Length: 371
Image (tube, rainbow, N blue to C red; front, top):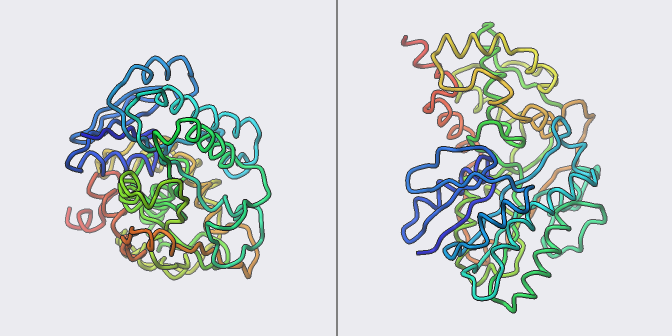
């Protein structure tokens, strides 16, 4: 049996990876998170503060079963999403967290065989440049800006080289990630769902709140999990960096009718507004929705959406002026290496809103009408 340690198991990527590895024959899966979690069927949970080096050494240093690590944890400053991405202390903490996981596992004769870490579009400077060349490719030199990605990657490369090839690593660069994780800093789905139902309860159509159109890409969290499982065992993934996307492109304004339909609403005319400014003022309204529809979602709105509203503003280009250059990353490399899974982005949005409805984290419009 191989054992995958899924670090950051409450996040949008980590949660999907924990589910996926737990479902695979021949695999054990252990989800690591700072707070206690109820793992999915077939998985175990390990509560661990990654900033506590002594605790990580004690919990991981003596284990002889962990063969693979999928590192999907990230430290984001409270209230500092986007702006904090260039903060030196945030970079230092993210490096220390990865070190605290890898160093206890990387020991002579240990079982470790593979580590996967996450980067993303920030590797190409999409958060600081008005445009990047299309499409962005993994073989480009590093974009000349400070980023914890580079700190983590340099550490991993140096550590792996010192191991003498006892284990290998892969780097994933997903585009905008969508999934069903609650309280995630970088998952727009719960925030969009809350915004939609606040308007639903006012009898309003679902107006697009973002800024100007931009051709972009998305990645389904389940696809990332499948790619991580592929990379864990494929020789073609060793020491490689891969862009990841659904396989198509999208424009928010063009997929908005599908999002509205998935939530049982009509799409309205655009109404630009900041979700990060709006949603925190709607705690009483959210509590009424939770009570009215007997939801299983947290009554505390912040616990449900995390910093997802600010992330949605960023990805929907709130407050920006167009036209905006497209952000496209080539996924040819990973397909040529052997990973071919894909999903239509409209189908992805429908899937995740349906999943939240099935989990009773959002109301289901059809059931509400029937009731």
